[in-house]
Image 1 (spheres, rainbow, N blue to C red):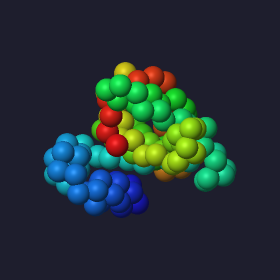
Image 2 (image 1 turned 90 degrees about the horizontal axis):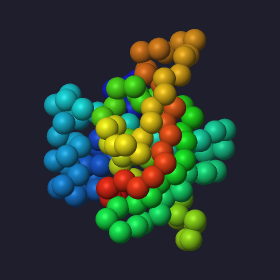
Image 3 (image 1 turned 135 degrees about the horizontal axis):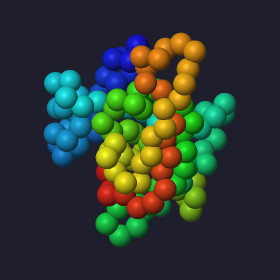
Image 4 (image 1 turned 30 degrees about the horizontal axis):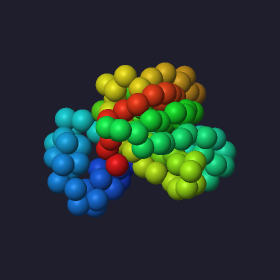
Amino acid sequence: MLLSYRESAANFVYRSGRQDLIERYVRPAVSGESFIGWAYSEGADPFSFNTTVHKVSGGCEINGKKLAVTGALGDGAFIVYGVNEEKNDLIAVIVERDDSALEITPIQTMGFRSMGVGRISLGHKIPMSY
């Protein structure tokens, strides 16, 4: 299940057609060096977002929390979804695990411990990876 989840994220980036993103994220995912995960929902309503993304000089400012992210404990990057409040657009941003704006907290689960579920908190400017 986790491999299918990670494959779909790598395929999503691959389908962007952007060679810079393919080289940085897809090639390592295909070779098993580093995986990409999804950080989408924030609760029970899959269309309600509190995470905000604003373009700023040299990157973007992202603020929010993703309460339960599958693969959070092992993925090298995440496709994080948020809204741009000015236009109310849904935006996907790639955030790397070692970015100082990202904090990952393990979540204890009753099952599926091998899924590496964690909470993600984001809170300041990151390099742009739209």
